[in-house]
Length: 253
Image (cartoon, rainbow, N blue to C red):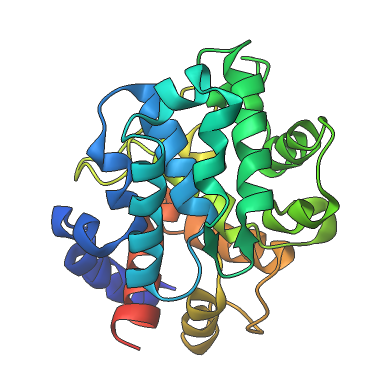
């Protein structure tokens, strides 16, 4: 484990730099300074963050354009007639039907709350070991409105042993305090030591090959196992090693 930590620390130093932002979906919320704009832009960017990275960024920027580059104002103030502009939008299997429900949910939430943080953790007294309960709560709350059945596949939950890669990445952006300024660290009801690694096929493959995982399957069980291994290297901020594992798996191939 000491040798693995030494190697990961070297990779972390290589990839955990401000220029990481430029070609990553996290660049989308970095276009804003208001917390609600960051939350909304980040939520959409994380939701469509699968597939080709250039396509992800282009479609996320297209979404911002459709929301007049003011996501919070659009969510709060749009009229029904404004929604017609979204009818041609699609990113892989995420289409206009899904997008319109996302907008409906966000409008509902922000009409009652100032931050999207309360959609994950409604109570300030949160001492959970990890974010599993927060993700399950969000899944139930997100689909508490009347919704298209097809849209359920775009919000994962640990209750179904899903790795919840995109939601865990989003939580990393919102929760983790980052000296490099990549993650925002805007939320305070969750803490860095509670975060779970955003596990996808690339991170799982690298983790398996260097001995941190026994098998490459991307599921919730493996995400927790890997995070617990990383806590042996940094108990307070285990998911910082996402940069190292992602860098080796995607950028180095």
